[in-house]
Length: 511
Ligand code: GLA
Figure 1: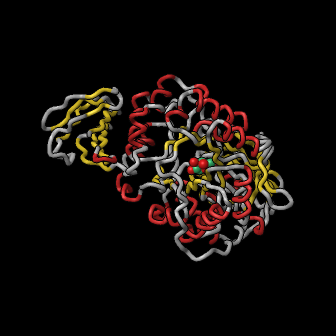
Figure 2 (figure 1 turned 180 degrees about the vertical axis):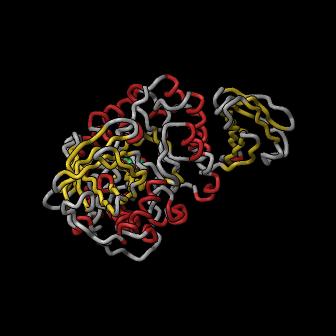
Figure 3 (figure 1 turned 135 degrees about the horizontal axis):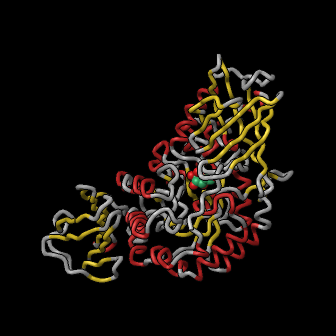
């Protein structure tokens, strides 16, 4: 079954982020005005209580001029996005933002009545209240250390493998689901196949106590006990935060508490941190991204615990050129993946140019896996998994491990394909050739071997082929192994050719 992501917490990137950057400059250019019963004009805060006990705040800045309405929305306080498609519907004004949020607003006394309906289902309705320009102002940029190269933390010599809660559970993740994911990682054979991280993504945070310590919300009653549970299974526990005051989901970020949070994570027994730019974009210019990430890299280093550092800023500022310098073990290279062929294939087949930047300890991250989430066919999920393994990508399963089908388990635990991802040489595949929608990608393996993927991007079956010479071989290799059929094949002396199903793959390893 395909469960929709919880609406309202999932930005559509990178368009949303590009829009935010534009909108932010627009916001700064606008005069600060408070609402004074003057129609839609003003700055508004809408409070939306969540089942976790946390109340999220969405900010609207609207400007009505001669019947024309413009403005921005900061969904869950995570950064401004310009409104578009404004139209009148009876007494209401309707508009949308690129997160897939659709608004209907109407003045109601001194307030604003707001209804948000989310693409994919669900709606929130609330009365937004006027807020002052002061409350709207982004917090100050923190002082940052000069840029320098941090020492390699020695972690992630091969791409990290594990599970992350976001793609399937989004806001619904809680202590029970994480424990059950850990149980299932062991019972399904995933642990034996190499998966080790159990990673909590956004929405675990409540706020801070009187001493400024980060406190989990009621979905996570005892983080240390959860870490102990996960560790007792021989697995590792990951967590999520942002350098900004709010995460992408609008929960508490690490802004101004970087050192303290790193110490807290270490005390809980956290082994992995995904650090998501989000609202930091309201505070720091993109050019300061490196020192901002360095600040947390430094803090993790000083925490006294080995913590994998996962940068999530959607590939801005050529992160692959400075990611290792801030202690990053992996960095997202794209906006968010979605569980469909177009999203997955567009991301996956556009990674080749980043191959020079991957290597032991530091990996390009084209985002987490969607295998088993229901939006693609088994063939397409095989392609997704094969491509990610060719790319030496981190393998973070994003499905419900407790209920996965035999097909899904079969894909996620195909050890011959995983061995390509985890090859100690740590090279990322590049495109060897592309013709009529069929692409051949190659990945050098330790010991002189080569992994070869024949991918068919067409909607119909097609034949893919290459010659040994094209693959850089002087003659037919002694062993050619089909990694999905689990058998050796006997190709022609001059090259290899095969029918590849629509959206499918033939994956080989040659020695
Ligand atoms: C961003 C990230 C996602 C996820 C969400 C959580 O969109 O790119 O992977 O972490 O935030 O809010």
